[in-house]
Image 1 (cartoon, helix red, strand yellow):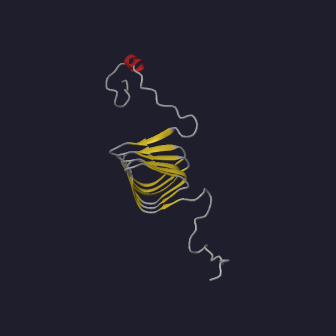
Image 2 (cartoon, rainbow, N blue to C red):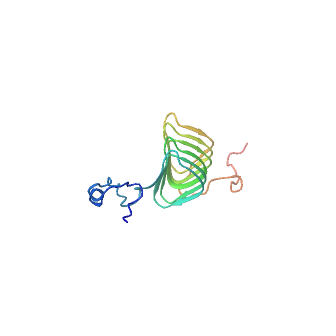
Image 3 (tube, rainbow, N blue to C red):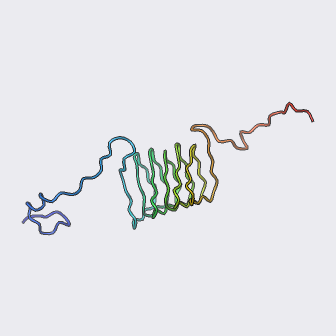
Length: 155
């Protein structure tokens, strides 16, 4: 009894070897797309990855990356996001923290605070929250670390 690969039907072995799947793009070096969550997919929990991931489905929880997160136009994210670079074209609800750059494309809607040293916001993008920008590695000023500086100007 011959066992055929799942989903292949009753093709003969010869027909299976003649048919080839299209070559996947290579991901040599940093920045290549290594995972794709397609439209219609829904996930909940913690997502951690090292390379580039694109989400066009729904995700709820927490996302941490060492490289790039791309949220496609149909992407709906309800999460805290921490990544090196974040490009958003879909809808994100939650705080976004990027160590290098955040790009909000014209179809992006972000409801939450964005912290990044570099921001690119295209005309049409919506940001309902605060945008905090500081040089990489510098602490953000807050009430706890602000000090009054005496003025030399007598009044």
